[in-house]
Image (cartoon, rainbow, N blue to C red; front, top):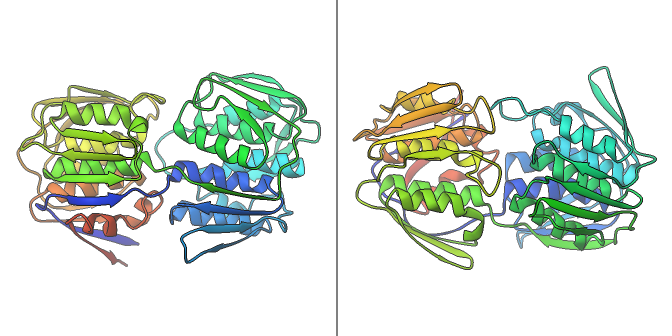
Length: 421
């Protein structure tokens, strides 16, 4: 187990480059199975979840190496297994992304139910019903999900909810289905567009990602070589911007796409932050005192992202007035609340709604990360708090941030990482 030790009271200042996006890299890594040759990925983040995904690919027979130029090179010719290793799959929610690519390449797939952060029910019913609509025969046996895609065909698929994972899984399986597939009420997140770009680099024909309707023309043979640059991580960018806002700092982020962060930037402006944007840069200057943010509701893109709810919760603890946060995506995503109370935060909660009342000052304390984004929120609160904050469970934060302590130190924070017993 590891912990971050944070000394508060030092505003974030300077410039940082945003890394590639975790939520784009994981489905792209899964989609590499579709290619029988070599792939080069640029800006793939070094994260615990990425390491787990690479371990799964290696178990299936693929090979990979990190280059001195920062590129991740994968050799997929040796991939031949279609049964996902249970131990690793239970550690990472995104292992479910492997179903579509395995079906596309081998016509079959066997997996267990995936793991990940305990932030509420994340049923895979939409994944399975979408694959079933493509003609995949699915049965459960001994805790395993066994899929037979020997007779996949294109289909019209209407998702009951715009699930990102289900949308992407169907996209990856459909490239091998005979005929055309149309996904309606598809997720509109930018990460689906990034996956579309990669699939098309493999020689597939996918159109419409980023809108509610996606068209995949299946049955195309993938090419032997491809390369792709992972899109910037809008959640990492949002977290760093919140860090500057909560500490009264001033930062500029490069390799950031403002269009992907519209709802976040709007709320930061509401809090009194001055924000300027260019094509791939965002700058933020925080006010002396954060203003009231009246309401935040998490929604599918382009609404406010659930992955930024905890960070704005932390910000609201030291802002004027009261902020109501409604968590519409996951029913168990306020685990950071009781930990922030240890630092002096004041809030009330009923079901999926929390009301945070800003205080003048937070105080350093020993707190524990219960999930990835909640852990990042505790670090942000520690940057503002008086004294030292110890955030246990740093390994959970590692799932989505590449050396968060190093990134924050480069911006003037006083934070170290320590291994604990």
